[in-house]
Length: 210
Ligand code: ADP
Image (tube, rainbow, N blue to C red; front, side, top):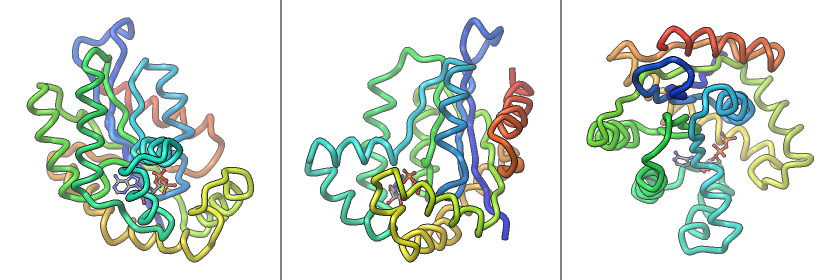
């Protein structure tokens, strides 16, 4: 079984581009979004927005939003759209002076996609591209179980929660790929191999939009 990780790109001014590139990094849990996003931020000077990281920060700060999110995350379920979209909007609107955004782990539903498009349309900065990383299911499970040994994340520690997250991804999130494909913005690349090889493939795809 093949899965996706999607990106939409944004680019740095000194990187010879005239318009912002806004990238969606899309894909199943454990497909390497966070790893690759960190490298892309360094190269292109984008703002990385990971909804998973934002939720974990809220949990660490023991906010009401964090406590609500945790009850869903620990079970491998999606946090409700209303909560997630509101948090994402706040983060984008608080950071207007950027070269572009890498959205990681968002949008995960069609409703989130529509909300993101509405927000970016208001800002006059549409999604440029969505890039998906393809990774086989058993590879994903193995990566997450390995990550769970050190990440301290409860959702990585239990194989049944990992499999639930994959099932949720297939049912609720893969339609997002098709949603952006309607506008010919979706592309997928192989998410297996070395980190550098995958990064190179991503950059090749992103550079087409510069
Ligand atoms: P992973 O990609 O490894 O599952 P994330 O850090 O992206 O890790 O997400 C962890 C959890 O946070 C998800 O399983 C889900 O419960 C919640 N979450 C993150 N992003 C979203 C989102 N866009 N919509 C709903 N829930 C989300």
